[in-house]
Image 1: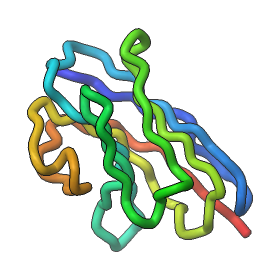
Image 2 (image 1 turned 30 degrees about the vertical axis):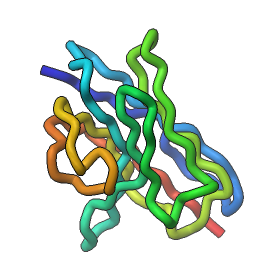
Image 3 (image 1 turned 90 degrees about the horizontal axis):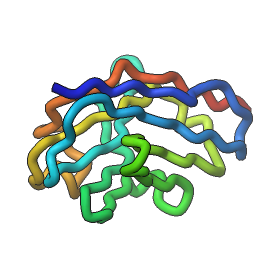
Length: 126
């Protein structure tokens, strides 16, 4: 069993930056991927960025060049550095973990993720 706890959300003005953190509690399998997803009311949860255990990454087109996903194995923590934030980045952001590698690790799909955090709100105002 894994527990994922997000932090770092908040309110920021357009062009600002935030860093989200996701602390992982429990045993993490060697072949895995972890990702950040976001959701606004009335819309599907979408994949933002994903990283696998080897460091391969996926980014949604809408965040490429602005967001960076990273992981600190020693701290069992996943990060999402968000720069040049836009109002359309406003959403609830969720951390998720998949204990098996699959297409979901490389295409932003929600399928295959076994564990989810409770979410942290990001609000970008103009």
